[in-house]
Amino acid sequence: MSTTISGISRSHPSVVLLFDSAMTTVNPALHIIPNDVPFVELDCKTAFQNLSPTERLYAHHIARASYEGSLIISLQISPESAGIFVLLHRLYSSEPVEDLKKKAHAAGFTDEEWSAFLTWSAAFFSYNGNYNDFGDSKIVPNIPSVSAFL
Image (cartoon, rainbow, N blue to C red; front, side, top):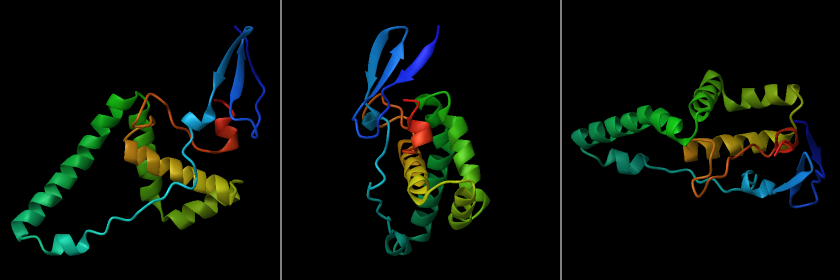
């Protein structure tokens, strides 16, 4: 079965895929996290400092268990989510984000594409997988070479 992609347009709200004369419309907005999504830092330093030593240990172990269990949740989201989780965790643990940004630019990423990748990564960690938490929509980075395959 041959598959051709037709009608991909950045100015048009949908992408039309042609599969052996049967047309299916896919709305990329359902799969892409906008680059302008606000991120808010959660500052819990003061609250943590006000905990008793026992409460601090409890908070630490609950956070650790949550982290360890997140890989299990990823597997329940989709078969590929656990592998993406490990890949992104290793990527962001390997070196500072600014160094990764320099490497991305050297590989041809624009500032907008780098921002899109960071936004998608944050959404992936927030959702604990590569699907939106409000439906059955897979998320992909807002990078033209990736989103063109929707």
